[in-house]
Amino acid sequence: MAAQCGLRLMVKRQAGPLLHQYAMDNDCCDYISANSGSNHAVREAMELMLGFIGNFDHVIASRTRYDDEYKGYFEQRQRITTRNFKIDAGSIVASD
Image 1 (cartoon, rainbow, N blue to C red):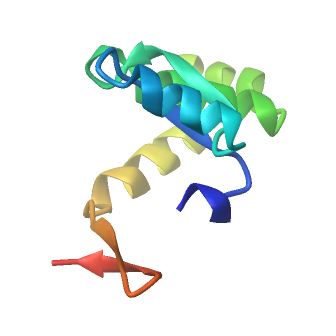
Image 2: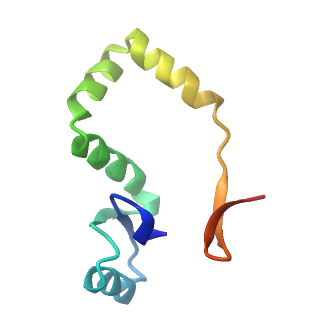
């Protein structure tokens, strides 16, 4: 999947030093998180992506003000059902 993404982030795992090295040596990731998955790695990745698209300051300002734009985003986010995906025959598909 990493080869198909525009910005490839890898979540750090203490148990995966060889996988981390492989990912770097084979250009499979652009960034490895400083934190593990159980220690806010997703938040770290999302902040990085907001910065990458030049939107970090705007998003944080909107959130801290809890303005209408943020309220609208939050309401939409709460309506989303999380889905899981897998690779099946070389394609990324939803898993049930």
